[in-house]
Length: 314
Image: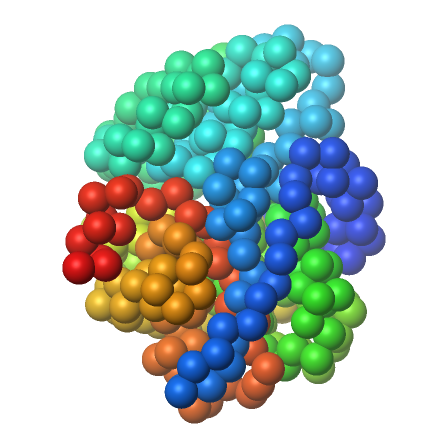
C-alpha cells in the first residue's frame, strides 16, 4: 500500500459499526497543583485498549473469500487480542504472529480468545511490513495500524473527544505505528479546526520525529522502552504523509516520565494504565508549559503487567 487516505466521512461511517462492540469511554478531568488535564479513558474500553475500534471496523467488513481463509496479524499484544476476540465472535480461524519477547500476560490473553500464537524474530518485523512478506501467509492479513478501515475505526475515539471536550485546544495521543493518532487527529480537527494534535513517543523508540521531518518511512534498529505498546520504532511510508498532514508534531518522553505518570494516574485519578497508555499524561507533565489548554491526554490502554504496576507504585 503506497498511500493511505482517510476522511472524516470514513470515520463517521465507522461509528455505527464500531458501536456494535466498543464502549463509549469517558473523558474525565484530572486536577492537581500543576494544573488541569482531561483524560480520555480508552483503558476502560472493551479488552482494555482502544484497539477493538479499528480491528472490528476492519474485520467485520471482510469479504466471504477473506473470511474463508481465516485471519492473521502481527502484534505484541493489544491489537492481537482485539483481532482474536473479533475473529472468535465471527467464527473465523485466527493466527496471531507475535514478536519474540512479547509480554506474557498479553500472549495469555490472546490465547484465551482461542487464537493460535506464532512467535517470530524481532529482526523480521521490518521485513513483514516493509517487504510485505505477510503476502506469503495463508491467512488474510490485518495490518496493525496502516489500513484505512483500521484508522477510521480508531478515529471514532476522536469524535467522542470532540463531543466531550469541545473547548480542547490540544490533544495528546500515544504513537506506535500511528493509526490511533491519525484517526483521532482527522476527527478532532474536522470538528474543531483550531485544535492541535500531537503524537507522543518514548525517547528510546522515537521513529515519528524523523518521519515527520523527512516525509519518509523510518525504523530504529533497536528500540528500547518500557512502553511495549508504542515501542515498535517503525513508521511505514504509507502512513507518514497522512500523519504529516494531520499532526502538529511529536512530543518525546522518557521511561522515567512514563513511570511517574503511571503512578499518578493510579494514585490521583484511580486509573490503571499500561506504559503506552500513560505516555500522553507524561507528555503533558513534561511539556505543559508549551501546550495550549485545555489539554486532552488519551490513555490508550490499561493492560499492564501486575509486577510492573506493583514496582511503579512502590
